[in-house]
Length: 541
Ligand code: NOJ
Image (cartoon, rainbow, N blue to C red; front, side, top):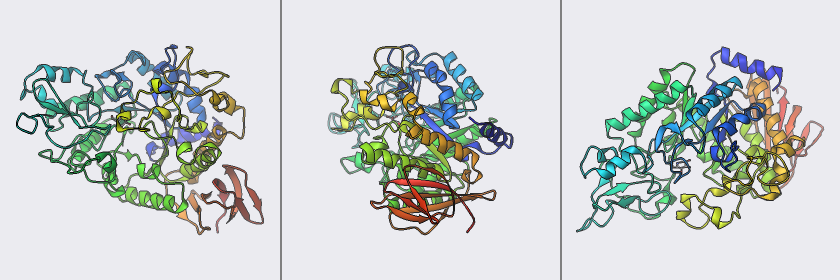
């Protein structure tokens, strides 16, 4: 990190600016980041050992996926004890040390909270299983009698996000709801005990020093009164696009308001980001009203095709809807639940070229950006993982639905798998041998690598005043391209992106700063080959 960068970070903090409005937040998928004890699974001390890498990359905060005690039916999104660390990932003392060390590196820590469901091994669910229908123990979850003469039909037609019915029957005849795996029973958020328990869990982690929470299934929790039928099969196709009685109910916002009050009672601007799948950007913006959560992941951007018109439409809509509630927009290209964007954008050389251009587009947009571990290395989805390694419960949805391919551990250095991921001979998912050219070490030695591009883009983003929170101005540009200008403090940065199939000529009124690939500059113009983006320091027009 340069002296200027450190100073910029310090003055940002002294000024008490709302750090999260333009933060770059790096998602650490704990299981696959770095393994300190050689058991093939990433852990908290592993992350701690790699903090210098993350600080040097130039991100502002880390979001850690769940590391709590869990039977790992959904890799930690099935929590058995919210106030302790799973031995696979370390200890509570490791969590404390990691938070302290991260802060020492100028990195904030956001942890995952999973409030829609617990693990079936959670003490509450175990007590509910042992208790009778109608008991207070069962009232913490959603138990119902079945339909049909013998109650042999599920209580309604809801389907699990992972496939199959969302209900499982117990030997005593009652059914319980699980919108995800059957090992993830849904909590009953109409029960005040559940509210009190989660306020206590948040307090526990806030007291430990975390800077915020990523709220899992923030659009879940509240269910429509009476649990009405959806009336359609294949509900997985309706997720995030249609109104469903189990997601995005208006009453869920009361929970977020209460949590915001709790966060605001702490110093240091602790934040929450919603993992919410809402049918429209307008509905998504509800999660970030001034008295609710600070940010919501922008999955509309993630799902947009590599097409200038579509991207522009999503960007405009996202900025407008977030702006209406005074929230920063967020920009997400990949995470641990979706196919990596190098592969979504066409895989191979084309996918990588587009991912490089997308990085410059994303990091120039107003708001907060998320970087999923490995996207800075240009990692593709691993499409040919041997069947015996695949473990994701979402495979129940059918062929190709598993998420293991985006969760393959990071290659750090060396010539052979597991490429410095851990001291052991293997990693929980095998790393392709072809990733020897994609390791952090290999890319650090190559100034043309995508890692070098991310480092430079993040440095410019931090140092260039125009890339802080603020507006965006579109400029006229040829079909298939996007050109916009960011302006602040008397400085302007322009970004041009060519998503088309032909070289595009864009007027260049200033000095090129960074290009995602080879460009040609002559006579006040830049020639951008297909799938290329350029940043320049723009003069006033
Ligand atoms: C969203 C998480 O990102 C995903 O990995 C998990 O399977 C579901 N929520 C259920 O908790």
